[in-house]
Image (tube, rainbow, N blue to C red; front, side, top):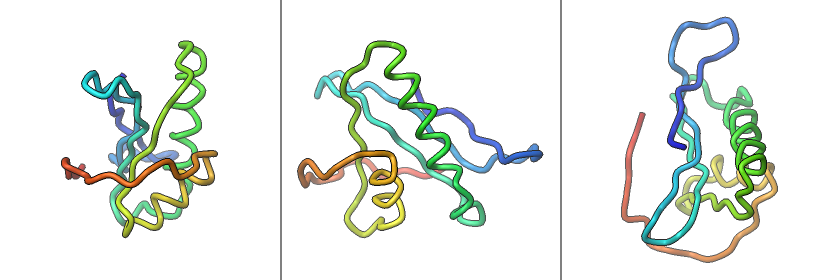
Length: 98
């Protein structure tokens, strides 16, 4: 569990992070990702997200949530592509970067 480093194909440079995190207070696993802007639209978030979801299934995790702020349209598109649907609106108390 945790956010893992993602590297581009053939690159030795960090392109972003992706992974599952367990939130004990809420009893939820969430898929989180963040990529450096020059790496956007290369499919890294989708590919890494698919791997994380497969890993969750292999570990018997039945529910994974994805969270994105409303203005993060690209992140919402990735979550939708991965099969997530809107569940509820909540205040995002944590904000972080790579």
